[in-house]
Image (cartoon, rainbow, N blue to C red; front, side, top):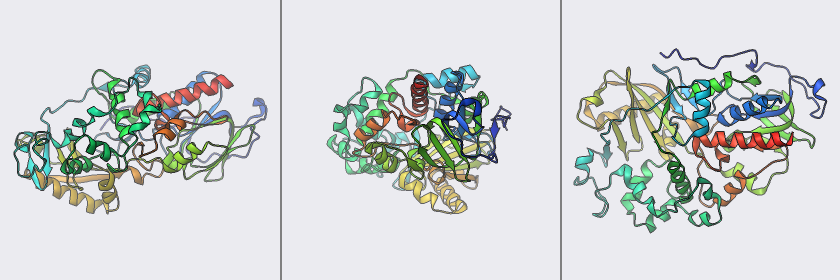
Length: 470
């Protein structure tokens, strides 16, 4: 079990029982109470933590409200596992300049994970196939022109026709919107067969080829091209990063603070919590995912594009099964370590380590939805049975540790956003929106960077804009 430092409850951190009354936001600072600040930040994920740090370092008072009982947001390490295991925020890209700079300053260790270098075991059409046997297997129903392509490489083999953005922010240009079409339509134009489409859809990081925009893939590829060097993991789990950022704050971090309403009062903003507490500030930065923000009451003037995106921006469903094995059978049965499958209850299977031996099953989209509706034990039993069928060496060696579904998390409702068909121009407008007193940040508001770096980018940009006005 890890003994690494975790988030520490300090005198500046409140669990949620703090009393509060409505305070006039325009009152002189000398009369402000503990519920009044220059800036209130909603959400203690990467964007909120970074924005709060910048505001307090500039000499202003910030209050950080977090709905969960921990900081981190979608950087979530399951510390109740045999070893700390990430459910979100796993990979740190080489292009993540802000992330690495903050991690270096706070002493957060990263490492390059080992690679098996053996590809995947394919469980396709009910058969287990290695990369060597895939091409000529009966279960490989791809046409001759595609037969040599592995299932996991099919999608990327067709993405060469997408525009190569010189910089990631080019996804926001009017010219880029020409590829804001269903990914399925784009792939068909590139010559993808019906069987290729079926296999690509089986493990898509989205809901479906019909609903995911091709523009989303062009933006993703631009993010990949920004970096050079290996992808890293955070030692002892990604939440060690947000733990360190939270522990570094001087500002009040108030946990279990579920915001239900935000009201722009003209001379300030009032934030209301589900338990009746109220907070006032000159500015508010809301970093909640739009999937959660749409459940809040927002009283302010917002552009139509912002209201539409809050209501409709899709977030990817993802369900995981964490399994423990009696021994690392995948090291000795002659098959590749990981599994890639078209089975909706198997998806992708990754080895998490050997001490103790653990596996992670990753399901997206409709498959994640199916598993999330099942009883955990029922789902675990069905998934283990599928693994045993795929590789007999697993027989009787697996047990379920836990199931986890991001779409069931009340304050996330999905693992990350993606661009739905026809949403590119609206999302570009939203990402550039500058509010007067109510501001938005988070990975969904990123312009120039992907993933976790995008969350930091948006938090920094928003904080700096507010600081310029104070």
